[in-house]
Length: 417
Image (tube, rainbow, N blue to C red; front, side):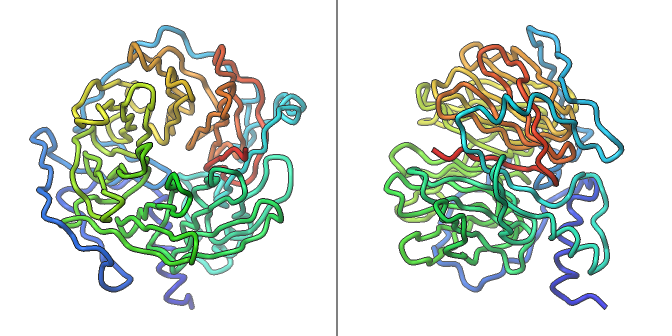
């Protein structure tokens, strides 16, 4: 007989098992007691164009038949990728690993323990234990560390001393702080259901993490380990996933993956203060600092929305092609290029930020999720879930330079300074 905790974990993990389109508002029970911050009166965005709301997965998208599908017009044809040949497991074959080893970067990778987001989650205790046995964070070439059940996001605190990993299937939800000098967990934070990705305040005192399951955001006090829950008015930021922080640290931008908008939070008051309409299923948001723009990937809209950071007005909508289902995105340090992982397209879309055009579509290992650009802007590291590998792309010509196996279910990467 399965325990109540295991039963609940299997139910949440069932989000990965297939596509489920829902109409109307999805209600979730919130846990953790009263909210730590008051909920302001903010009007709920109701774009007239939305007639049906889809429920995106934290790692896998669902098609929404009624969603308009803008088509991209890339200026270059997709190229064949070395190492793309896969075995029956779907894992990509290694390619040019010696080149990858010689690169001067220390790369962390989360491995969620599932090698296919389309696969049914095991429905037995032994099956869940087997999944957990392969759930780690590791250096791409180096040691691994078991942080919890199904590690999801990994981000490094500026300065490079600590990394933070979210454990998507822990019950209750947790985020861990890792000392990168010893590669050991030094603090475990209790957060909401299904935490995903982190951003850090400029003074390095706080981290903010989204909770996909509880549809909240948590602030982590890095000095004392305390956590503060941030809710949304009328719970209308469903499935928070992906965030960005303004350069001054005063405004947090949060993607509401179960909606068609992003929210802004005043980090001084911990109160939501506004919203901006995007495409359906906004899954990630990043700031193009040189252009003062917000770039949002729309998982159910097969598109990227560009917003003015100050006014939150829409500047452009960039189509990626029908069925591409964008996941996370990354911008080069100079703001000239955006790289977007396409889960179903098994590719990375490269966008010229000035012209707002897709200039390349780079095939990578299956089910790419969270691309990361190296601090010098030379390479993109793209982990792939089903491919259980990290593909390295050279920014200068968008050429695949290496494919490095990273079993099992590589989800997210971070570069250690």
